[in-house]
Amino acid sequence: MDKPPDALSVAYLNVAFGARRVLQDVSFSLAPGAFCGLIGSNGSGKTTLLRTILGLETPQGGDIRIDGVRHTGRSASIGYVPQKLNIDPDMPIRACDLVELGLTGHRLGLPWPSKARRALVEEMLAAVDATGFAGQRLGSLSGGQLQRVMIAHALIRRPRLLLLDEPLASLDIAAIAGVVAVLRRIATEYGITVLVSAHDMNPLLAAMDRIVYLAHGRAVSGMTGDVVRTEVLSALYGYHIDVIRVHGRVLVIAAGAADELPAVLETHPVHVSAIP
Image (cartoon, rainbow, N blue to C red; front, side, top):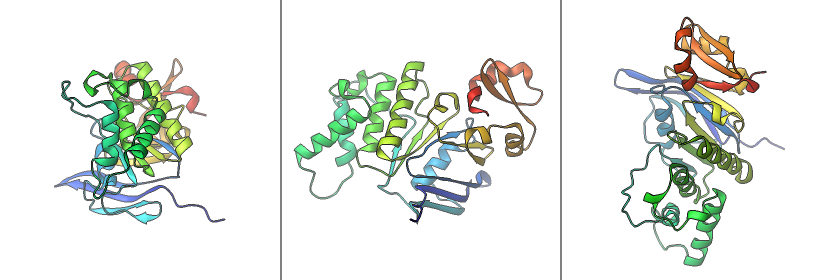
């Protein structure tokens, strides 16, 4: 039996804004139902990569394929959760309304029958554990609750690929754990490939199948234990990087930066169990 095509394949992707090269020969692939962390510091090119996959940026070279088919523009097979959603707290829109807009807000032609539409909205709310606050106004939701609703909004059209731009930013520890568990379940139960950008890989480690690590517009990908190594990250950054185990974590730091350990700990921690 032939192997199914990769859900997402990126090959030698190059993106530049004027004279500034943002992505350089970025290549990686993700199988159907994979959960992948897109890791890098601010300015490393994570958002640009996601926007290019979405068709919102035009690459200067390279190839993007979804399910083996070359992808050249926007596609209903890709769901997207942006980094921020600016909401007027007085806006009279409920969580369930936002989820439904994912189905009806950009469709042409006749709307879905109301009964079928409601059933699908309820299914997506349940999939992200948001049923309990489905009737609340968006402005009253916590950060973790809003993220779940945004994920349901992106999922309701059953995409093959789900992209999330820093969905864990500004969330507390409990909310982070809950959102990551929801995303892992979506990948496993729905077979949707999940690509999550983050500057901190630690919360994703228990859920990730693979990692794409970005630095200076270049990328390395693979299993976490194969990527988060001194020799691999040194080659990626272009200068020596130390991968140091401290109190059950691994710190990724530039050589000679020992005095900056606390700052680096917040930037690139990885649990020691991920490194064989």
